[in-house]
Image (cartoon, rainbow, N blue to C red; front, side):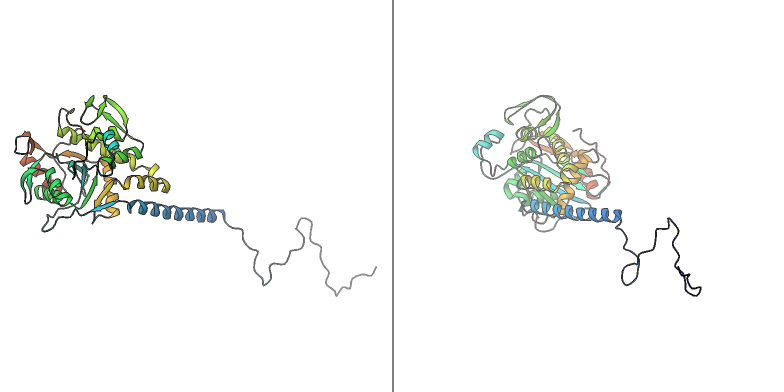
Amino acid sequence: PSRPSPDRPQRRTPPPGSGGPRRPGPRGGGSAPRRRRPLRTLLTVVLVLLLLWGGSMAWAVNSAWNEVARVDATPDGERPDSDGRNVLLVGSDSRAGLTPEEQNRLGTGKDTGGARTDSILVLHTGGDKSTLLSIPRDSWVEIPGQGMNKINASFSIGGPKLLTQTIEHNTGLKIDGYMEIGFGGFATVVDAVGGVNICVKNDMDDDKAHINLKKGCQVLDGKNALGYVRARYSDPEGDLGRAKRQRQFLGALMGKLVTPGNLLQPWKVNSLGKETAGALTVGEDDSLLGTARAFWAFRSIAKGEGNSVTVPISNNALPTASGTAVEWDEAKSTQLFDALKNNEPITIEPDDS
């Protein structure tokens, strides 16, 4: 064989294990494409899922909010000025939408036309702690343009607007929001969440409220829950005892409504919202955000993170032309209203609910 010419360069064989000759890169030069990073892919998937969840939640909440009824509850003329935010919550004896069979089952009695207030509460937020204030429906107060009467008469005479005006006139608190629920709506909400667990302090056998409850903790369905918050003849404290039970039950109900299991599932929010939204009436000027904040404040009070009080009373059996009424303690009630009006800590003892 011929020997290679000393002037011609010789090809060298790569040593073993060197991987052999390198393959040329992609056309146009540059390095080989990098593999996708798993972390980046995971973050992208999570972001997409969050966007889908957020869109679904917005749809569910707006769908439920559109089912809520509206009413004019804003008084005309000059109104008081107070710090914080006050939402009026009214439980009316309206039987609208209930069939005669449902009226009999729930023990509401026949519809006599119009509506009266079975419960009156004011939720105050803005200070260190939220406060839920009960106003006995038989409170003897001045109704603007109508003279002295029981406070629930203002609702019968002029509806939500006159009731709001009456509360502002007698407390000095500006009412910024309004929520109302009737008999049938209340029972519907309770049944929609599968009942509410309540610890009944004493046996309650009340024919007028259509309940016969034994002492102890138990889950109340819509019918028994309605009777529980309405009963007063089986309560030694009468209307004042009923006010305490109403706050107790409202807090427990909100605590069950506003849970992660309900709030984090769009389909649950949509289903529960549509079942309960038709039972709720809010003020024409109320916003979705303001109403949601009120629900959240109710839940915080139920967890013991707020105050639960009744207007201080000096006489629970005041004789009047309209029957036995409740008279406020002028000095103590004024002190309470001023503290709420100025967003100051309240000094009266909270009720034992």
